[in-house]
Length: 485
Image: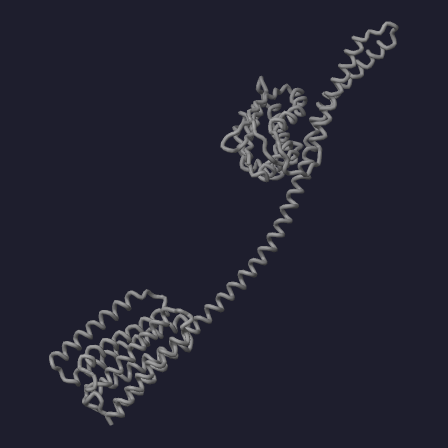
């Protein structure tokens, strides 16, 4: 019967070796540390079972010291590999298994050296493993709580099978029931060996199931994430196209509003410009009449006629300049990337506003220090300057200052070009400061509330800023900053 018992132990050994080797070979391409630890530990345990089944054939050193140590290392490695399925830190279980393994090994070897009976050593061996193998059950339970699958149930079953059969063997030894020697036949031997064979098989299947289930779940999660990412990308692409269309529409609206706002804001200027334009036209008519008289006289004074004609040409040029500036102001250019000289833009706009300002006894001073040109939409930026100057004229006209003035200046600093319009008018009421740039907000009796909103929109579209500083009754200062590059 001894040969039969050892044959069964060898079968257990083959189960250890074959199953773990097969798993290792089957999953070798995954290059997974957990798989390698599980399989290597199982093979180490298989080698340990070979040594533990050959007492009398191998030396006592290999049977007691090497066999025990290999069994402890193999069991601890498999339990740690299982714990890698949980989300908890591996440090506490590694420390626990290291400490308990060393403590058991030292006590077992000391008991052997002290000459303890084999029954006592067997009781220590089976009792220790019946307790330590409960870890299989608890690890399987934790895996089941996070992902309730068949694999976690099989690991729990394997842990119970390990512990119960080893515990049954320990109780039989304690009660002196069944086999009394290590290789004697007995019901306790067969129960323990059958339990070990079943537990080894079930634990390997459970470990493999959990690994493959998690791998499949990871694959499905990746596919879901890819599908969601693709859906989001399509949605973003749609939104991007819609946003681009909206931005294009917004730019066109701003362009049209710029032209409309010019027309709405030029009402007060038209009368002054008509008066300004009437002066050169009257001079041209007067000089033309004088030339006509000279031509009717017998003694023509060519020098006087020449002087009158030169005056006609100068007045014609003056009138043409006014008309050219008006055409430029009301033009519908779509080139949003023109090279702009801010000083020239200010001069042209000031020349249009000056007649209106003079009619209200307002002086406009210019301090143009900027030297660099930049790129932008000339029509839109000219409208910004016109809006700010018109607002300044209207605010200054309402003030009680003895000297009414507007100062418009340009300068450069830190890669930016600045335009500043400052007046000593009535200022901005405190209650309107927070909404001064909102659409349809205005302090004017006949205003539409578009000018400052439109000006800010244009400046922002040029990557710039429009700010204001004002105290009620003490004037206002608007500052436009634009990047040179």
